[in-house]
Amino acid sequence: MRPIATTRMAAGIPTGRLAIWWVVASEIVIFGGLLVSYIMHRLAKPEWGDHAANTNVWIGGFNTFVLLTSSLSAVLAHKAAVNGDGPKAAKLLYATCFGACTFVVVKALEWNMEISHGFTISSNTFWSFYYTAAGLHGLHVIAGAIIMLIIAETAKKNLELHRVELIGIYWHFVDIVWIFLFPLLYIAK
Amino acid sequence: MSEHAEHAEHEVNYVKIWAILLVLLVISILGPFVGIKVVTLITAFGIAIVKAYLVAKNFMHLNIEPRYAVYLLVTMLVFMLLLFSGSAPDIMKQEGRNWVKPEIHVEAQAPAHH
Image (tube, rainbow over all chains, first blue to last red):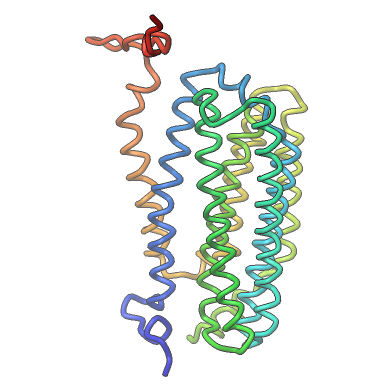
């Protein structure tokens, strides 16, 4: 029996995919609110540029490269799932997970370096925003990686292949959030 | 039209899109080295918007989704911006027609030493 998320399409979009769009829509409010708050404070306090000068643009750039590449493997996994090739989709999801792990490890090393230089979440409002925004995003990366591992397990048996697309949409959104976090936290100094 | 056929019709060269995204990333990193603020803003935030558009269109396939999915996301974005623009003057201005933002002295909140 096929799950209702695949077969029912009362609104022109399969129910499972529509649910993911709603997740993304609610995430827009969460991350959008955080980013707009940051921008408002940043415009009002030019001295934040001096604090931002302490973030490492090359580390941020490398992590952007990792996320963009993991988005490529996620969309290729979706393509494989559309072609009915579950095992290939699973392999590409594992590759995406590898990207997620690389991102988190690099982020952890970066935070370790920053904290050892005395820049902690309570140093000032800029660093509070920095750790909150990057931390919330990091949690989304970890959650996405765990869900991807679960989906890859069923996909390699050629089961529930529609889920590959659903996690892909979520993952691309996580990528888009980072696309905006990167210039805000690393480039604008 | 089945979803299968729909995707086949809108075949995208994903590797090419990824390569474009990487080129844009390099430009956004190199932008500040020019040393002109306007160039930095364009290469940082202008390119971020282009990258987000490319990912949403080609990787999330928003271009072949029913239009109301796009409207749903844009509506959330607009209402979020509306909500925050309401609080913007309070954050970004130090004084208004009938008010002055009080100075917050962190030292004053520190516990007194006897």
